[in-house]
Structures are given as C-alpha cells and as structure tokens.
Amino acid sequence: MDGGGENMGGPQLVTEGEWAGWRTWRGSDPFEDQSGPFYFRDEDDGTVRCAFRAEKKHMNGGGFMHGGCMMTFADFCLFAIGWSALKDTRAVTVSLNGEFVGPAAVGDLIEATGEIVRDGGSLLFVRGKLSTGGRAMLSFSGVVKKIRSR
Image 1 (tube, one colour):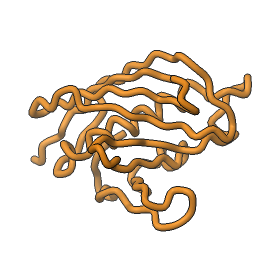
Image 2: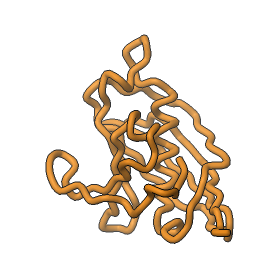
Image 3: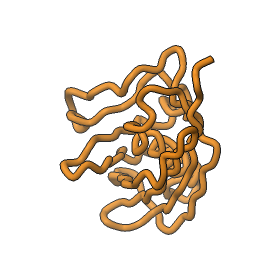
Image 4: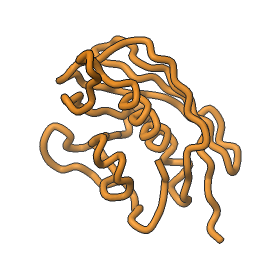
C-alpha cells in the first residue's frame, strides 16, 4: 500500500451495516479497493484491530483463502496498525514477510492484530497475526518507509 497520494486523506468512518464504527481508506489504492474492502478500528486497550469478511473472490482453486489475499490484507494492516505514526506523512511498504499457518473459507471473519515494533524516524517496523475463529492463519512482519515532502 502507498500511504499517501493525491486522493489520500484520513481513514473514513463507516456509519452503517456490519462495519459501522470501523474505518477504511476508499479510493486511495485501486488494488486494495478491488481486493477488499478491508477495515480497522481502535480497541479500548489502545490496540488496532483489522478485519474483513471472506468472499468467493478471496479464495484459491482449492476453495480456501488465497495466500495473495492474506498478504494483501497484511499489507493493509501494516498501515492501519501504524496509522498513528503515519498520520502526517506518505509512506510505502519496503518489506513484507509472512508465514502461512492456517486456512479460511468463504464467510469467515478474518481479523488481524499487531504492534509497532519500532518507529525509527524514516522506517516503521510492524508485526502482526491474521486469524479466523481464534485460529491463526498468517504471521507477518513488515517495514514501512516514510516519504518526506520535497
């Protein structure tokens, strides 16, 4: 994900439906718009929770969630988890690593939690875990590069 650009503003609050009270970015990343929709919210304990509902378009030929979908969502999560550190800057993913540990099926609620490991000036280090129904799906880590204005 590119954390900024001409169409990039803050995350938009969803006001109705299953995702009321969650936030998302819409219209800022065409690939994510096509792949999602993905959502996030701040929890009472200060952590960020990301989520989406698995659809047929997210599955592979075997009927389970495609690994590319999991990694796309993990990339979204880097920026959602790191939102507080990225609010006033553009940013891009420079590294994303993942270990696939479990499947998901159509209709499953896919969730992610994580943490900022280090906010080091121009680089933000994040790690997290995707799960469904309390079962781990993907462990991920990534590095986001903050882009300074010229």
